[in-house]
Length: 329
Image (cartoon, rainbow, N blue to C red; front, side):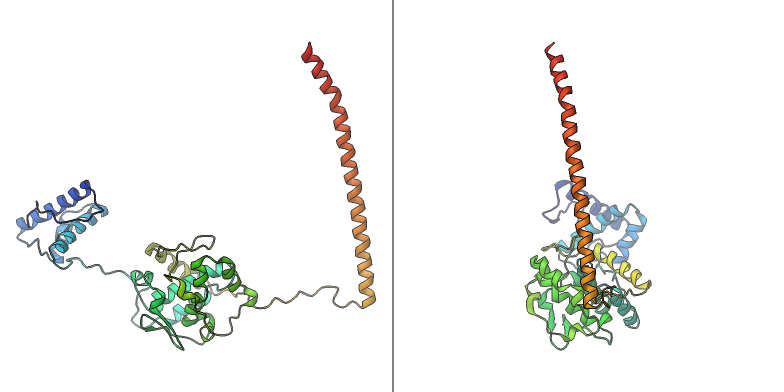
């Protein structure tokens, strides 16, 4: 193919962009002819040598790779530069289950919107750190990809469970599924109720509890959330967000888990607990007397304020009369 050949470069590109891509492709073809290399199809080694001999800014090199890739695909050839996405949570030689469980344990699971964001992030960590999906694979997870039975599966991969409910990967999945339906539909009141820490229990496995089917209403599961807890539906969580979420959660886990206060709130003891019935009546009488005294003092203050207002108004009348007389003259 000669430099003048112009395959379809995409409907979103304007004339200037297409011309720039063609210029990069033409330079690559000319160099290949001079160096005795095939330009179509080109090998990854040939493309790498070209980019090394003709350095440029990162944006320029991206355009060059895009031009070369576009011409190969337009000619029905395989991509000479297949993209291998780096994993946010690299796959270790041996499963790094301990590290994942430590991160899951440190993530808050209750209170709005802290627990909402925490449950979404824990679900993301299961996808990337336990199932070792790529970011592109994670962002496209839908309810159809999830099977909830006695075992949790996502795209056929079994989500493991562990002894501690706070660090259990299967529990992290069901905790998110438990609220993602109302999050998707915008029923904030239901989300707040489900995240109520006074009704929370971190001593039992969430993955062993009955899971209602509301989560299947969500068209996507990995939702972007704003600072107020509203979900942005119709848009997937960006790769940049994933890249920032994972390190921050791992750093928080490195500082050690923070005990999350959940369960029924016990009333704090007070000095009235040990009073007899007669002593209680006496305290109530003292309280009534103190309230009456406070109301009397407030009434005196109000009377003083009203008297001051009257004095100020009377003092202002001569001044107004003087100003009116001056204006007449």
